[in-house]
Amino acid sequence: MAHPLVPATLAFTTDGTPWSAAFGDIYHSTEGGPAQAAHVFLGGNRLPDRWRGRPRFTILETGFGLGLNFLTTWAALREDAARPGRLHYVAIEKHPFSASDLAELHARHPQFATLSRELCAQWPMLVRGMHRLELDSGRVVLTLCFGDIAEVLPQLRLAADAFYLDGFAPAKNPDMWAAPALKSLESLAARDATFATYTAASAVRDALSSAGFDVRKREGFARKRDMLCGTQTRGAAPPPSPDRRAIVIGAGLAGSAACERLAARGWDVTLIERHPAPAREASGNHAGAFHPLITRDDSFIARLSRNAFLHALRQWDSVPGIAWDRCGVLQMPRTAEESEAQRAALDALGYPNGYARWLPRAEAARVAGTEVAEGGVWFEQGGWLRPPSLVDALLAKAKVGMHFGIELASIARSASGWAAQDSTGRTIAEAPVVVLANAHDAMRLAPPANVSLRKVRGQVSYLPAARLPAIRAVVLRGGMALPAIEGLCVTGASYDPDDPDPHLRVDSHAGNLERLARILPETLDAFDPASLQGRVAFRAVAPDRLPLAGPYPGQAGLYGAFAYGSRGILWSALMAELLASQLEGEPLPLEAQLADAVDPGRFLRRAERGKG
Ligand SMILES: Cc1cc2nc3c(=O)[nH]c(=O)nc-3n(C[C@H](O)[C@H](O)[C@H](O)COP(=O)(O)OP(=O)(O)OC[C@H]3O[C@@H](n4cnc5c(N)ncnc54)[C@H](O)[C@@H]3O)c2cc1C
Ligand SMILES: C[S@@+](CC[C@H](N)C(=O)[O-])C[C@H]1O[C@@H](n2cnc3c(N)ncnc32)[C@H](O)[C@@H]1O
Image (cartoon, rainbow, N blue to C red; front, side, top):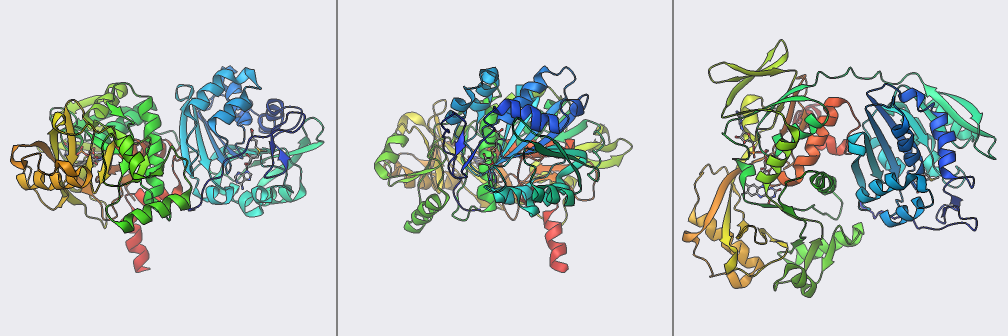
């Protein structure tokens, strides 16, 4: 997967129809995209009739292109009084347009002006992977999957009620219509799923028949005589609607995000926290940094961090009251090898400049606002965030029931599913679902099989900003230095595995000052470590340094959202969306491989595989 995403190039035929030079074909019939969408894709799938009165309806489109099918569908939904509670529209696209090209293309269809503006405002950066956009106050959820259909289809976890199959003509775009790709739709179909496509090619008809669809010809659009549509009767029955009650344990980044995502879906959530207020443990630092990771081979963690980073930016944009700044993050290498590896990764992956790019020293100094030892990777959209403000903002938005000052001693099966009890055996809450968002303590309440978490002490130092150069960006080089936030510069952090000391220590401050001197050499002797303020907290770290987010194997209703390690700011939004999607039976917001990589059951699965 480590190859650049190639955006589409805007071009038109002489009659003004959007044209792809790469495929030698037009994007839609010369008689008009929206009319074609209405006849072929809505009509062929018997929409809006089939979505009426449904709590949720899921469409999978192959070939998002200009998004005219999407906009036509969204517009039809808005006009339909009996529309489904939520429309999930999942679309695959190998060559996405830029937001500005899309806006230009949509300007030819003024009936979509409002919808197009909303879509283009959230349009993601053109990087590989899944991008979930919440539109129309969450009534429409668009999950864009940027990549080749052959790579993306196996990574989808969803049950589609309707398929829009919209590649270019099979003769010009054979990959899109390859039999294995069409065959794989079988496992993505919900019971009674339908499909529609512009083409009537016999190879497509045969492949869809062998994927279990009862394929029929229907009158084509405009000058096209026939099109294909059909129904699949073998698909998965819809999951029963969940009993939407949950207990969330822990009011840090993980728990507050889970509360907000569940509450947004109408869940009745009870949050239980042992401290008298939220964000008193790891999530209580003055501020921390967020940025994605890049690796030359676009490893799991690089892909997961990309998905999480872009997801978090969109979600934080929609929540008032968070103290954060996308001031940019400059990651400086520590050694010549690291520098080479970073540049090689950037060359191989061909990211857009707005995502990650190499800055030579002079430019790096300009963005950082101070002299720096050398150049580095520039994450223009990265920055800092105050975790307590995020926790507060999410809880204020979620409006869930909250119990503070109660430490849970156990969770046990009960008639309602799960009961959470304090040390006297008193039941504090009962619900069919429990989300363990209580970091290390999840291991005491319900340890997942075959894994142990490390407790890693971390101390940050809070330096008076007036005595430091006025840096404008987050700068990393082994350690981190944040710009001044309310008069303090956060720097650090120590990483002390299995060190239980909760107190501030001079040696940890001294270590943080050394880290800072790698970034800002002139600060080496500027501070006395014995006089510094700071904070100590503990990271919960899994052996593979990835979170544990998702269902416990074999324990109905028990979910994990912990082990966020050194990256809780980065992980929290996407992990919460994953959890809520799993609980609701919605399409997952991340690739199947990535969901598996954070699954709490992964260690058990690996152990069992090892035995087999
Ligand atoms: C020094 C340091 C620097 C960091 N810097 C960054 C950074 O720059 N960027 C970044 O992304 N991440 C950073 N992190 C990591 C980040 O802070 C954590 O990953 C994140 O805060 C974890 O959130 P959480 O909600 O999982 O855990 P916590 O914030 O620890 O929340 C768990 C909550 O559960 C409660 N709880 C536990 N057990 C029970 C129980 N039995 N009953 C009731 N309540 C219970 C706790 O009281 C706590 O409030 C840093 C961490 C440290 C330590
Ligand atoms: C006919 S256009 C789709 C038009 C679109 N549905 C609309 O409403 O505007 C076909 C789309 O399929 C995309 N495509 C072609 N080959 C692909 C592949 N192998 N994987 C994913 N997408 C592909 C093209 O880039 C193009 O955007």
